[in-house]
Image (cartoon, rainbow, N blue to C red; front, side, top):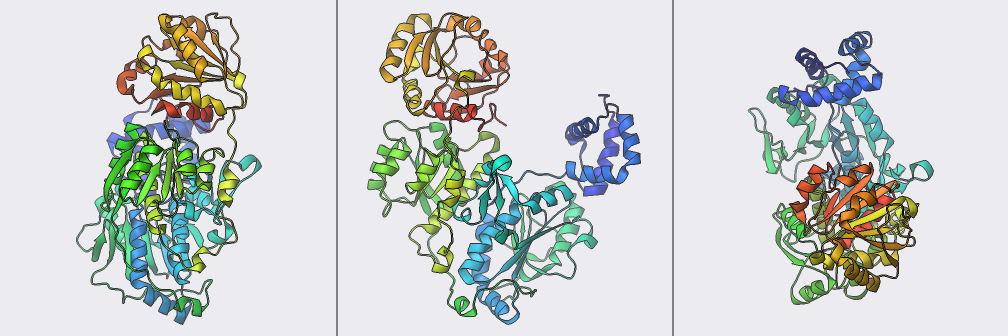
Length: 634
């Protein structure tokens, strides 16, 4: 593909600015170039001059394509959860006037998500309002989602998302609002038609007022994580245009990194990036609108705003990973209401700390020594007096034997362990589900809220699955460990017990320790244990092999498998170059090794997939073999 000159990128940057208002700086031209290359590749065009010829012949289509290419699709459900808390506070403060207006004019609450991308924010708002407004007070609502990218708007209208993405939604909102796909779309879930009926979508360019909804006022406007892409003048223009569509006393929300401060901005900040009319009180009446579905007036009149309760809370974090404990403390430090995070290394230690002190919520891992999470829920958890449990585990959310079982045993919700490459998403998910758990603890919600035609476990059952290796003969686990670190090998061997058909496991150790390792493993496992020293040898499922690490290059070269999981339990004693032969390789590093493996991985041009305690190695590799986990970090 012919290289681009600066003038090509300047020309393209001007087109992007004209179409989206996004002012692409020269420092970001590499991003522009990569997207141009991708566009040309899709069109089958190899020369930039040929692209400009194509552009001149298809200018309207290409301009639309660049709207989509330069629109940020990075978003997720219940992003920046603090704003949902503020929305509920605003509703509770204004509920009498909202009810009065609905009683008089049958007017629903109207919400506008003004940069909705692919719809996650719209459906988050709709699910939230189902409980915070409709089921609590009987008042209906409408949510409008708009975006400049027509392709994103169509995606949002469709309302279908990957299961892995839907699983980040708080448990409270899943049952009755989402349905798992079948057949070719078994890895996706769709928004329930009843919820989708309360939303609508359209294409809007925030810089072009004539594309805005006409003759409408909104009670709440969310316009988050979009201002950062505009110039100051455009931010002012858009904010004031949206402000003119907000009803008096309404709520205006921008992104947490986008506080609005400019001359002429007449709204009062009431929380981070959250605004209302200066001097507004609960007496402000939201805007009138058309009628929508309703609840009997007699039911509405009996619903009251909840009494205020203390918002401060203490967390017990139960996890054998010191890395995760540090991460969890950092996550909770971002919530001013969290006053303390106490750690426990396993379920037995957690029981002692629960008996000795008061906690408001606890996070619980599944794989831990002494007493794991499932065992704790089965034998040590006191549901009536202990705090609600959030499972935070590396185990896939759909695992029937572990994740689904934990929820059936009384866990409040489930979260897959924080990913270091996407920590902000984990922060929002953990904090939003924590607030849900705190709110539910000890509360007796109105029967209207609990009325449901579905069992609370329906969605969990629909996504649960027995995770098995499709073809164990095409998969291998390969462990590197030194004599001084054999203690971390034990939980790996013990975890193999539940697998129906285990791929071959090879343990590479220094030659002098082969016999002792073979004896140790034989005492821990019911699998057959053999020595592996023949490059032409055939590795059998349900068998554990011990080999001399010095022979690794000659032994590895003869292996013909589709999936290879390399598990580093101690600092490598030899180079890892031989493992480059596998195009599809998962690399797991024990957290006790940490950065000590970095230089070895770098020289071998391997990428670490996960760093975790050895108690999680078997489940992580199983999910990789079952195509539920990518071999390398995204």
